[in-house]
Image: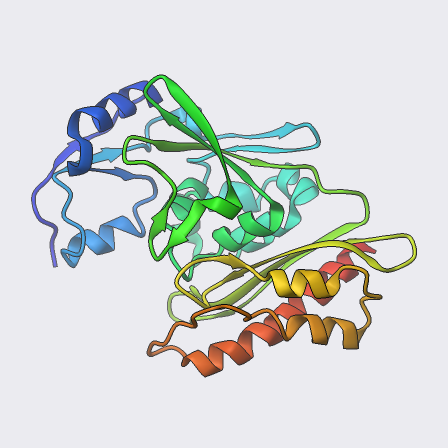
Length: 288
């Protein structure tokens, strides 16, 4: 299928892109890598009258160290993130998950900002952003604001972004000493989307007990979410196999599980506890 007709703009600065957003309002859509939006346009599920391509805004593509953490431009690609030594050192779970997205062609074009802004229920990076406690910076005409990842993902394909805003930067805070991270997913064999995926960030104390934990879940429900029941069960535990299994059994608490041709809700509920346990064990091992 082909898209409906639209006007195309390729601004070279954030200011120009924001001016176009202000001018065209709800008729406009932002294009990052395009791997989520273009298929929707081809099936006429999205029919924007104006397409604003962010691909020529070079100032939105970077990876910088910041206060022991990271500042990442929204147009930075999956491949750049997966191959970055800074990311591998400061937020290894982000590099790990980015390297598991789809295939080389998509990783070379798809962007972190596009992934987070689209809020696909099966996307990998929203779960990672939640687990890392990311802060998302937006830009609009004359203003910026910061949104916690915990508040960013609202519903299926819906975020806290306002229509006149661009997601411009993702800030990953420094990980405490003794922290290990991991990402585990059961992938759709054709698309590599997560049927379920779990990002785990676990801090282990000198006595071997869990000091803190953040667990991000994707693929299971309509949006990425944190497994707060699992987090609470982990904190203070000795992180042995029985403690991890008991905590992982709560990973699906409160999730309205997706039902589709790839997996039933019941199967996803089973998978999420299995993959939560795998991700937590790997994170604990990496912490040591």
